[in-house]
Image (cartoon, rainbow, N blue to C red):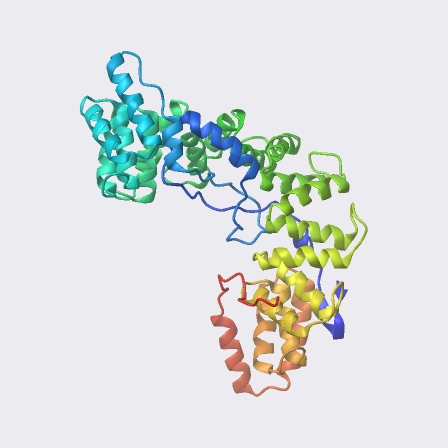
Length: 457
């Protein structure tokens, strides 16, 4: 452990080391339509897209990357599949005229012609009517009508409509929410090679949503999409190999898939490839490579990568040791809600390591990390209240946070220190005060808030 100013303790444990991040649940765009457009957009999204910070603690094992978001309108226009063989040439020309009108945003004209074609049983037109009603383009937005047209096209085997109907069932839009039905329609589209349906089906098998949890099936579908160059699926397949979920654990193969996605500019892949280089798992240990990959992801704004880069500077691994640089990257990550970074920047403000001592900011960040459940932060916050460091001395608050650290920390050293300090504080409290503090600790629940609204951070 490292001793901070005036006896406050900064424990180091294996949990502080950089780890592969957890990423959010799927967040679907309005609609996915054409395969050609999707493939085009995927190549762009893979280079420029960055992911929102995880809602769960970044130190947990990474699981899945959600589907990238796309502009449904233009995906539908550019990527509408060619009309099936056998449609009369006049009808095909009519459909092409409608596509051009839609591209020019002549929605009312598009609705008229798509409706005429849909009445003949044209599944492309039926699917597009679903899109038009879902987006409210040239008609009043009507999800029930959208679902009706998607179902007509889906029943005729139109893959894009099967995907779209699956989305409605997954989100409960225009139909009653039903994950089993969503999985059914995704599977139908996936078997026809619909890329996003394949990836989403992989997510559902991994998470056990609408289907029995099945890592082998998840890996199967991720693999199909990854082989087609979809960076998000490459990241997810890499995770499966990294953890041995549904496939034999193979960190070398994991590194291969992370690199494919990282080379496309995917920040999560870049960050986790940096992790492998830092740890020497699946690749030869190389701190300089770790630094380079962390930096690429950090510059894209990925909070976990910013934290990891800060920890490299603090340790002097692959870079000249610089507490100032470490503080810079910790602060950036902390401001995005990265929990370990919030604790690190708090200890730096407290001790003056790399930055000037600022007890107000130390208290602010330490409180936030403690309230979110960081056990070491809870211990240090208890010490701050016990000693009146940056805050008025308050024994009940001190007892509460020390009690939480003593009972919640997985680190024996933290627990011992918390118990020892708690007993010192308890000696100067009345029985009534101790009972109140214990009740407060028992009632405590971690906050979901990641940030203080404090522009001077």
